[in-house]
Picture (cartoon, one colour):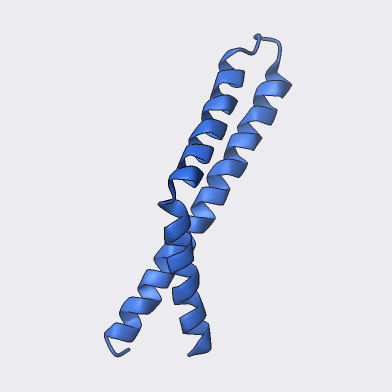
Length: 84
């Protein structure tokens, strides 16, 4: 039961973070900065574009971890409410 309570609490914390205006703005600024750097690269700067791609993937992965944590917490919470 403690594991389920922990998953629910983590899910709620992840949801709080995902709806926090400062975190939302931070992700937007970071993603926009990476995009702006990408469009300013010269054609021969393929390694720089690749590096920017991996930076963007890292940001998106961090967001996805929070989303998955939130969703898992909701699933566990619904299971407990449903008596399963």
